[in-house]
Length: 157
Image 1 (cartoon, helix red, strand yellow):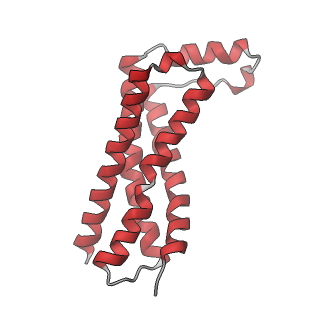
Image 2 (spheres, helix red, strand yellow):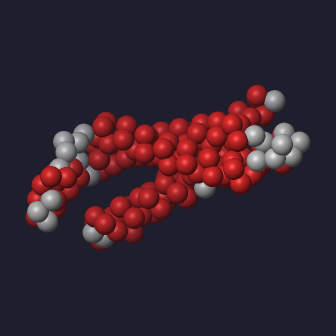
């Protein structure tokens, strides 16, 4: 049973990672420089939520096809959080590559934009590694919430 749960996590986590990379790549192709930071932030959160939407489908798949129509809240959360860690790692890697190699001026440009808007109090020192770690944590937290809601909705005893 543990192997089938692992297979579900890897399968749907991979779907989430692929979705994240596709949305991120699409975002780069249509021109990340064509949008302001607020629009890019919204598109970033959209890619996170699209990538994490596979949590619901993974829990449902596990319940209906692997575990004889039963899933507890705890198992649903475990499945969802592990998928979140996979997706968060993928998004973190994409963020690292973008800020380190594709747009190494990203942090200085963002800091300049905050200064121009009089929002100096929001400036924090960032590096590509820290940003990647931040994305991993953020995606995992959002994934936990989605896992909890999905598990509550899909639970069957």
